[in-house]
Length: 607
Image: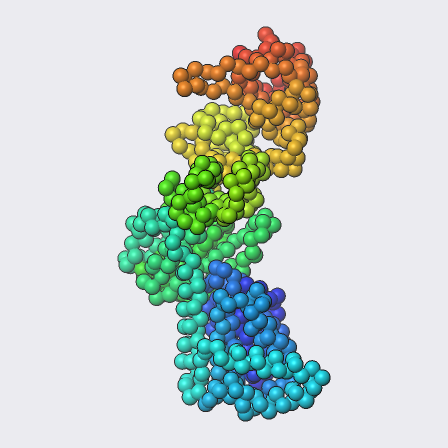
């Protein structure tokens, strides 16, 4: 019977690898274990002379090795070794090379013996193995060291822990092998969830939604901003409860947008493959299924639209940044993932920066400043803490100063994924709030954004649903790291040239641009609020400034102008005709410039 033709796919460097190598295994066994691994959604790459090439399935998502390490299974048959198999021996050699990063000691490798009464035939190179190596020594007489290396490698592989078929039934034998694979991958997956700070209380909060043991089918959403720890939380829930179910699967990277790929996030496997796995393997079972980091409704609908796919008592947990998608799916309940508490973020930062629960005394003040910067975001705490480990206090100070101008890229890239998925008007609303209106009264902000034609009623709602904004006591609140990310987007192309930014919000930047008459067409919004209330409840006195009277003449696209707390010696000679919203307290003249044509002006406040 001829070998089955399989479509050749590019090899995936992060896959589970099955090396049907060194000796032919019976074809039925080869095909059985290969397709069983495929049906279990494990990546299998076959090295076998009966196949045309190395075949790579799409990225693994069932019991995915979170460390992206290879797991290898070597299969030995009794057939004679062929001289043409030199490439396969080289694969074995590479796999067993401890100096190779992809073959390090923290990985596990197993062998399987087929059709042998005595597995020592391979280990001791007896029988057909001995005969084959005699042929190799003849053929490679001028490179005999290579043959000796192959011998040593083959012996080393045969000495690994493994399975021997002997007189057992093949179907039972294969099931044992696959069970071992699942157990190993499950352990690798679960061991990464130990010693997580603040996780137990979060799991407790989810229990009223889960109600493990009830016979209904529940689809539950875990919703929150990027970097808040949704995936880690889902992993811990998975770890705590997977043994309560008939079967389980943790499917990650459900959907990655084109924008996300440029930030180094791996491409997901085809959603249709995942649907096929759910229907074929999990159908009508009592299962625990996690769909991690979903971005689009159509894919979510394919994966979890039919509760009757799942047996009674099943639980499906979906993690995402967009609450509206969960609402559309009509999930049973939504759990909001929140930032760490003050004690927990201090502990997590200390564990990452000092490898213990308490910081060194010399670092205490700096340690608190970094924790305040992270504002309870686990991703930021872990990234910054890991970066600062074994660094001097001087280097800590330097890092803190650098962050004020240049945000940490790994944090920014994760947060920007949510921003990149917005429509243009939503992006503008986000940027306006990040630069001008964080922690401002919602009604006040909505009024201004309406004047700018940005449709804030729906736009703000979308930002809240996508975990980019919160409303608290009628104020709009944006996480400070999201605010920093938004401001960085404005500055990114010209970090040292504020005159080329679309928004200006810092006094020093505004002062330099206006005093030196350096305005440009790029500037669309300028907001300066120097009114600050003292501890006695008094306003600070206005700051006197000597701005160039012609400064606004070079800003024809300026739409938003708000100035509080600045006393100008000379009033502006011109104001851009494109202004839609003007609010200027202590305006230095009795009237606006005669040249000003307020055709687009929606609201005016001058005093």
